[in-house]
Length: 102
Image 1 (cartoon, rainbow, N blue to C red):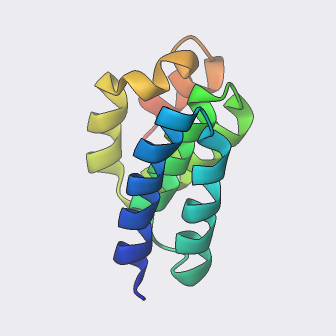
Image 2: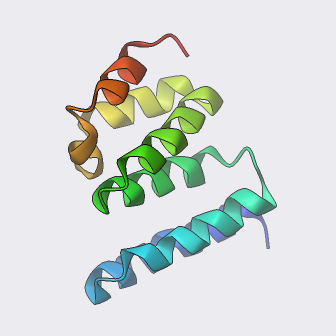
């Protein structure tokens, strides 16, 4: 199974988890995608979104920073409007990350 398939499985698990209110279970799918392919930027970004929604802001910022390093243009644009990251918007580290030149 390749990393893209694992990430897609994580996205499907996310949809199911929302219905079951079990967001933390989706994190495991992203963990596996990252373990399989450490430069899987989609998995880092998606895991950041899950952590943000769960109010795990420090973990969300760590993953978001990695996603930015791996693909800065794509994720800076997404992070600007993604509602999953709303809990982070006023966090000083999020503001600094959005203004950084990573």
